[in-house]
Structure formats: C-alpha cells, structure tokens
Amino acid sequence: MSEMWTAKLRTKWQKNLPIEKLLPDDQPAYVASWIYVFGVLTLSALAMIIFSGIILAFEGPAWYHTSHAGKFTNSLHFWSVQLFFVFMVVHLWGKFWMAAWRGNRFATWATGAVAFVASIATAFTGYLVQTNFDSQWISFEAKDGFNSVGVGAWFTVTNLGQMLLLHVAFLPLILGAITVVHVLMVRKRGVVPPIDAEATMVGEVGR
Amino acid sequence: MTGWIADFMNHPATYLKSGWLQISVTNLLVIILMLAVFALAVLIPFPKDKDGHQK
Image (cartoon, rainbow over the protein chains, first blue to last red):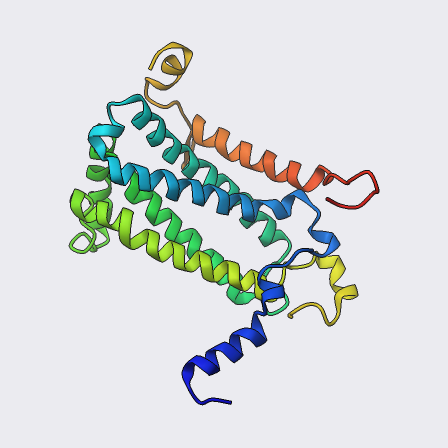
C-alpha cells in the first residue's frame, strides 16, 4: 500500500465507514419508533435555520424589519430555532434514557453534547443581533453576567459587530462541523439498540 | 401585530414563584409541551404498511 497520507486516510475511511454504512437503505426493526425520528427532525430544523439565515444575511436588517417577506423570513428563522431546540431536547431525553453511549458510542454521545452547548451559544448570540430594543435589553443584562465571571473583555456582548460575526460565521462553522462529525459517528456505529435488545444483539453492538 | 396574539404577547410575562424557584408561565408551558411530545413519541406506535411491515 502507498505510504501517502491520502492512501492511509482512504483505507481507514473505507474500513470504518464504507458507503453502505454511510448511505444505508434499511435499519434494524427497533428503529421503527417515533422516538428515533427526533434526530433527523433536529437536522431538518437546522437546515431551515441555515436556509433562512442565509437569506437574512443577504437582505439585511433594513429588509427583515420592514417588508412583509422580510418579517416572514425573520420569523421563519426564529421559529425554526424554537423547533430545533424542542426536537433536540426530546432527542437528548430519548438517547439519555436508552443510554445511547453503550456499544462504544461515547464519542457519538460526546459530540452530541458539545453540539448542544454550541447551539445554545449560537442561539444566544442570535438574540443579541436582532437589532431591536429586545436585543439591546438582553445585551445590557448579559454584560453584567459576563463581567461578573471575568470574561467580559473577550465576550463583549454589547459589541454588535463581534456578536454578529460570532453568530453568522464562527459559531455556525463550529456547530456545522460538530454536527457532521456527530452524524458520521451515528452512521459508523449504527443506531443504538434498546437496552433489553442488547442480549440478542451480541456481535452487532459496537460495530 | 393585531388581534388576540397581540393581546397575548404585548405585555410582560407572568411569572410563577415558589421559594427559590421562579419560572415564566410561557417557559413552563414549553417544558410541559416537550415532556408531552416525548411521552407521545414513546407511546404512539409507528405506522406499518398493509403487509404488516414497519414503514
């Protein structure tokens, strides 16, 4: 085998995540439950957030504060975030109660937890960049909180430029990257079986 | 914004307070909604096709 890093990476990828696992066309019987739907619902809401967010970024506040289409897109962005968190919390509860870190799935669980934290940071900076009196009030409340724990010099929540760039560039990149890794982990290890099914799945768990 | 939505939203939130715990009625309703969705997702059977296979 070639010693080049590209060849090593290709071999490792094909061994750990062949295309049949990456794009499966069937799932184990236990996946036929509504509780398993909330992961993909969360991803769908995230797609809608990114889609509406790109439109808002191109059109700008003068559009989304005044025109009917702008207000609609602004609301679409906001309510997609609310649904995103509802779906993600139900997904989190489902995975917690089925102990989804079993079967060598700790990294899947951990990337999900980090994605949750990154989502909160992204959402909070979103509240700060609404460019209305609500965001002004929130930022002046938040600055006291950040200053009280000594990080106000790095996270200046009253600085609209900093918060806007964090919200539309840095944090979405972080969240997007973690989400991609999380989904690849799910595809690599497979969906976690129910706890009482584990005994019948010997050899399957931890793939 | 007009109508009943405006009447519902254009005033400060109502808060419930019990000792150290304080929560807005809206936030409490959202938490109850999420718990209800979770319970329904666990309890409602997933649809099957006419041959009895899981969709």
